[in-house]
Length: 250
Image 1 (tube, helix red, strand yellow):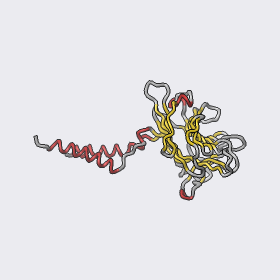
Image 2: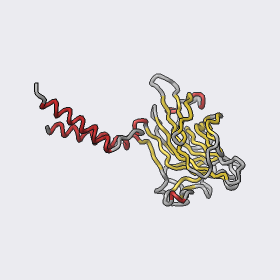
Image 3: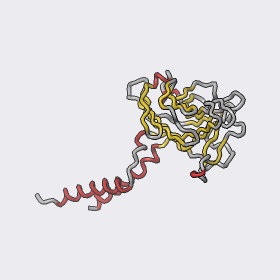
């Protein structure tokens, strides 16, 4: 019976700790001081100029939380690059918030992939949120996205072994937006040619800026995390099956 107890405990340990091993990087910016530039992120173009950097969350309901603030200045779009490993299959998640107080449609932010931490290096924008429009490439995939609110983006890249390119599926606030071939958005091999996740704020006007938060790159298996009750039920079931097999009459 002792060996079955050991198996039960091992199952619980594996289920409980698998999520941490699958995260390539996660940053919610809460450990960075207000007005500082976050560690691990490379400031590019005019991102090193004030007021770019970590700010308090713009919504009072999230008091105490921080976010990365980027605003275009003097004709330049600031970029923030974070080095990461892109596996053959991976998910990118982020939250984006835009303000469009003058309503001229210039608030513009991107989630991008870059080959090196400089704006002159090859890169591609894989998602754009522009003053109410969510865009994939040149396609407007959802309109009427509200300003002054957080929106959650989930981008799922999958490439089959043996294939040169992959497919990319998009979700905005848990709504499925569609799936595209990665080659339609960029001719690069996404999990091999890109080494940085890049956040970008395009040229903007007064009163228009972008916030980014809860940015992560994970392998797909880390998204489905068993709840404690589910883990306990699964482990107990295995233990019960083994126990029954040992003592059932024949």
